[in-house]
Length: 549
Image (cartoon, rainbow, N blue to C red; front, side, top):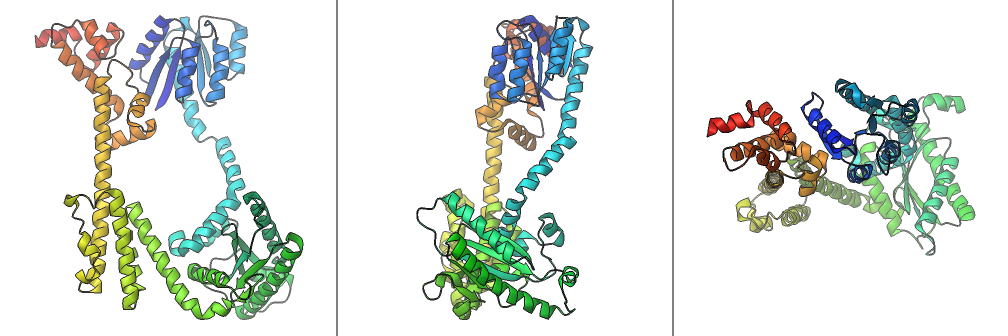
């Protein structure tokens, strides 16, 4: 839908053009009127407009000055000048400043329709304009480092099952790694920041560390990931064979290449530590895996290696640990804990997203990792607490009709077997999601009912899409889409229907004159009301009154 504003200091011109365009065969347009440039600016400050039809000579601010204000607010807006001035200088000035068209009032109706259709065509073509695509591509290029870092952070947090992994994706992100090869994992940390350092200072120093790392790791393929303001992760691989062969001798067996890559990474990390201490005055610790790992193991392994840095050795500064160092004996337990945390997160995300199938699968996967009874109890109550928290937030637990069985939920002994407990949790999750959807649907129907009520109550006033959206606190475009989803009809169709119904009610009462009926449903001009009624009722207002009397 497009928004059109008609501006002229002659009310007769504005009203006449408004009525003419209402009946014209045009794409769906929401029209507004302004009887001065100042009133037009007030409307332009409240909402976006796509088209403006304006006079040039107006008191106070003329049309050319108004055009400048329009372009400052809505650069894509098309301005059509409809004026009585046939002056070549005005024409040149208007077109030079970006006017979509310049028409004389004496030219008639068809040129106006043609100008509007032409402007709408330009707006639609602009959506796929190559310039816009080029600008978007340039912005994407600027944002690529941040997008790449965010994607890898999600990969570390949720794994390849949630994030997806393919060579195509890595190439899109301009990452030098190969999806078909394992990776060498390094987790690093700035041991401490000076308390006087600002967040900006820390970001700059982390960027400096990245540059130091990239310089020292040049011989191998590397991806840097800034995890937070203190931690970073490195993923490394040998260069592809073609590149390696160009740089020096290399065999065809992958094992020697990986052994050299691991040794090189360990040595490079030592150099990085020294450089950071001397150049940046920062103590940096790192833990490096002893062997490459599969992409699918990144989440668990990076978590356990980070924990190794947290526990630490000695005073915890400038550490260089291998494969978890002295914390290696805890690696298996930490991987189990990280896997459980990941499954818990998947379950919570599925509930929040209203995906019953994903919630069921996440629960099933979660309990597969709980192989002992204590782990089973821990998993059960963690899932039950998550369900209870959402039930309270969504108000389900307070409604008896929702069938939320709190006593069973918080009593693991109410379920004789592990399988029955999992089934109960899955059914409870399904019930919660269904109830949330029902609540959302009720809310949508409530909004539709309120919109219809506002149309009936304000029929004499402004019942534009913008005014209706304000009444229900929604964006106009979203309200239009929501209304169509619920009712199957456009709001403009309902406005016509409700106006027609009210007009018929009033016409059936002989106490009301026809011009009073027109005013009661929002028509200032009885003639336009008569055309509207005949178009939608098949007969004129007086004929309808005669038939019903």
